[in-house]
Image (cartoon, rainbow, N blue to C red):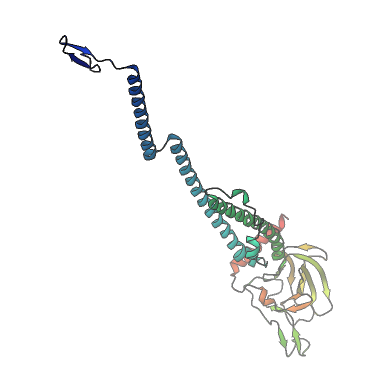
Length: 322
């Protein structure tokens, strides 16, 4: 007996006979079965989709997570870039510019303004518009700061070249070895050792023996080399530029001629006692914009004899290859 077939007992002949449904009943039965199947399938499909999502949604969700991760990494890189720019700014403001005597760049100029109020209109209307606009704003700010810093370093580099030249020309060392004592300094003298009258001493004397080597205290051009009628005897005057001149008086010998360019540490003369001098010594004088200033402010008294000797030798080596 088949499981899907139905049979009934026919009492007239006492035999089981198969029940055959009308075709309409079969049709209705088939429709009901199909409808129930569709409803069940939709129910379970909806349930599964809500619980684990459709493949497309799952893919989109994964892409969104990846995008968030990428934005997180970009945010970290932006933070690192901003930190580097701030480090450059601090070096700029606290090291280079003060040393080079340059004005600092204002924060308002560094940050600057860019674009208008609608410059990010193309990023509006999205789910993550706020995040996109925030990133774009930070990137624009970094670009502006980087541009300003680049121009600043360019200006500093140009200034540093001139600053180095200025420092090379600056009369910044002792004209004789530091193991010699200093004599009379920049002061008013009640009695001049030769003239016997009160007179201003506009330089610094060095108590050096006859024949001591005298060196240029900075790069420059010899503008006077010979006898000085003002009392300095054999005298050398170097124009260092930038308003500075140095004077070396009472020499016994002169190693340079007028118009010659000299380097710091270069031998220019030999000490003596020429002119209005009461004994062997070197008179050293510095003028700025035509006015005599105290030379002791330009001399490092803490330098040892060995350090001074090494410095002069280094300058002499450099001058051979100029």
